[in-house]
Amino acid sequence: MNKEQTTNTTTEQPKLIDNKFESAEALLNAYNSLEVEFTKRSQKLKELEEQVISHQKEKKWETKVKELQEKFPSARGLTSEIQEFLSERKELINDENCLEQALLAVLAGKYQSENSGASAVTKSEPKTIAEKASEVKAILARVPEHAPFGGEIPLTLPLKPKSIKEAGEIAKNIFKNSK
Image (cartoon, rainbow, N blue to C red; front, top):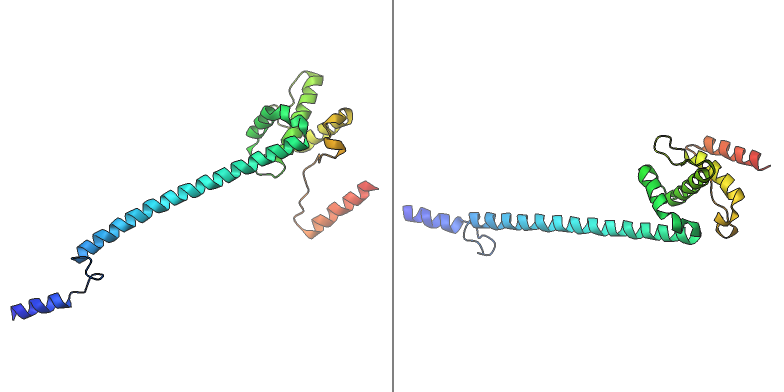
């Protein structure tokens, strides 16, 4: 009877994926090896995806810088000052118009430092964009060659209303001031 029981258990033992594995332990080892390899490949894929995203961001940034320099030729000589301004105000980098804002602030700082002998862009007393914009208005009134091809430079941040009521109030103010 012992012989019959052994024969029955061997015939009852399931085929392990078309007899490719001798035992369940061999199948488990193969599965674990595949899992390790899959993890390695997934990590490598994630690294490559991050590199692609980083490269795309660099290209986008290069394009923005090139467009700024084409639109405002005076920006070519101020790249280090613009870079310094943005490195001190990292919150601006996500803004679509951060380069224009930095250029305006640097120009205002240069104008003020030329006239007063002190730098306008200081770490101890950072100026708001509105303050910088008013300074730039004065600069542009005196130095017309900074205006690109006779165009206008936005001197204030765009207003982004949070409700329809607020949008209506902004519109009323714009119409009042334009009369």
